[in-house]
Structures are given as structure tokens and as C-alpha cells.
Image 1 (cartoon, rainbow, N blue to C red):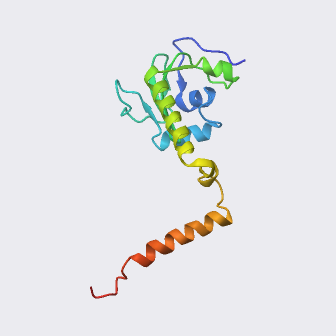
Image 2: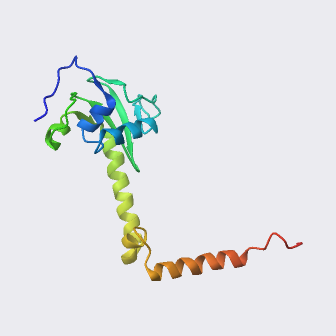
Image 3: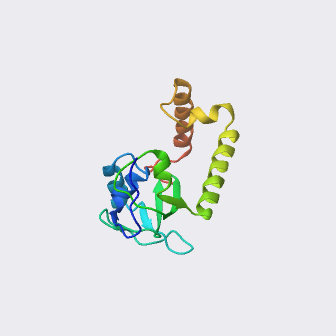
Length: 155
């Protein structure tokens, strides 16, 4: 079990994100920080300052962490340099109510979009296209290109 440090302890943000299980490796956490996907949470919005991988995390600070299309606003409740179990990692932060509500709304929108796509929806947008999917795409692109006028015509 990874020991949780006291309120006065300071940990690098890349280590903390890794210990809190936001990213599988510390290098992935560093890459996300460098790309601007981790920011200080400003009051009422997500447009906080960018941080660097060596930024010191302290208890009570808020951060916005973007992973794919998921955005989480969290408040640090404890710091740890060591990665522990998921139950220990859950004690390191608290997600804000606004963030939880936005995440649930986004999940509902994704479910509605999958339902609207019908039986073909979940598999049509993921992975390698099937032969049937490839033919549909080829037909769609062929129709789009034949309706456009060529740039050499004098119209």
C-alpha cells in the first residue's frame, strides 16, 4: 500500500498523476502535461494556466486533466510519490460536482449517438472497416467528386 503523505509534502505533478492512476506510465503523464492537457483549474472555468512536469502539487489545489474526450476537474486531497492500488489512488483526489455532471452528460450523449446509429453504429465507427464499409465509403467519395466541377473548366 502506497503511503499517503502529509499536507506539507510536495510531489511533482507527473508523479502524482501517475500515482493517482490518471496515466499508465509517468512518461505518458509527462507527454500529456507537455501537450497542455493538464492545467490548473481556475474558478468557474477550465482555462487555467499550463503546468510543467516538475510543478509541485499541494493538497487543496485544483487541476483540469484532459484524457481523450474526457475532461476531469479534480481537487488534490492527498499526495503520494508511489503508485498503489486503485482504492488508494481514489483517495488522492476528489472530482468536482460540475465535472461529474459534465462527464455523465457526455456519457449519455455518446449512448444516444450509438443508439441513433442503430445496430451498425458501434462497429461502424471503430476499428478497421469491413469490405462492405469500404465499398460504402468508396461510393460516397465517388459521388462527392463527380458532382464537383473540375478546376480546368472555363465556367
